[in-house]
Image 1 (tube, rainbow, N blue to C red):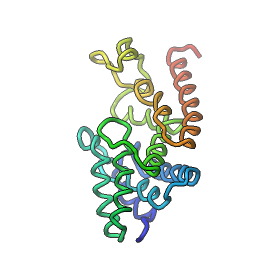
Image 2 (cartoon, rainbow, N blue to C red):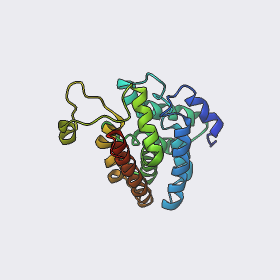
Image 3 (cartoon, rainbow, N blue to C red):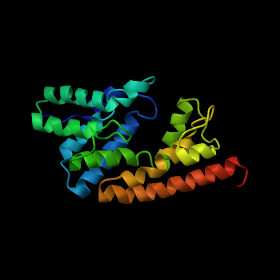
Length: 215
């Protein structure tokens, strides 16, 4: 059973967008190793799943159904890679479950194993804290949306925008990022999420204040 090298994995993300690029993968890989050590998860499964979790469907222009199904495409690719490396069917299945279950929004499996929970938490930690703020603003820019736009009352109440309302990074914070810490599975992931959440709340409070000319 051969392990995946960092340099080998890097090649899978050569055309990824700046939000889902190999820097993101490496951050997830490192924090997943940290969580795995604390939680007692199977490290080899975690490492392979982290390196493969966004390997398909992360290139610029991969939106719509392709982006929404990237967890499935990446899991399938993982099976091909790990089979060629001599992994057992059981270990491949464990990695594929981690990848299929890492997606935050609907349509993904729910993390059932400790390894899947570790990967989910590691991936979600990368949308919190300073990195989370930077990635969310970058994603808005890629979509030609502003870093900040005043949300409508309807969006605040229902999460649905009024016609013509932009989806700024602040909208994404209200819609998703503000709730991520409540979706964590592991104790160590929850502790880190609380810290990063506090930073993100303070960041968007300051951003809103500066945009309004209040500070």
